[in-house]
Image (cartoon, rainbow, N blue to C red; front, side):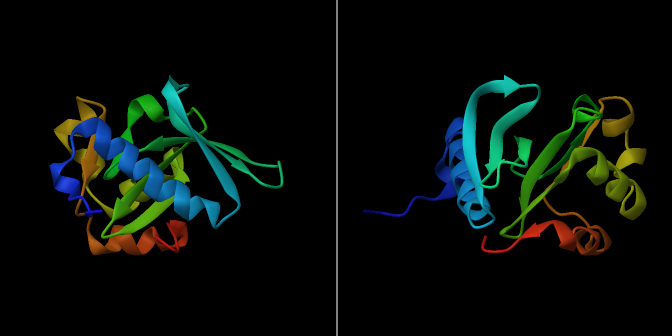
Length: 136
């Protein structure tokens, strides 16, 4: 077998690859992840906890992303930064982004309703540390 290069994958293959990566990490936290065929209520997958107490609706992204269409829907968002996966409530992410970056002052957010970055500043990365998934 030969290892693949992420950059050589098409968009759908990258989404599948990222799902497998984060689902493997979430398994260490007791979650079983089920990929959805379409964005059900904004979620790309559901993460069921082994104790049956938590079911997370998760939007999967290849980079830190905030979007108004995900607001107030009870969605969690997961994304990698420098090889570490993060998982948190989207609305909490918007609050952290507002406090630790200028993303919400951009035309992209104010007019388009969304913003994404694969290189957030150090203050924001530090603020996200409690949401990092170990084992990534």
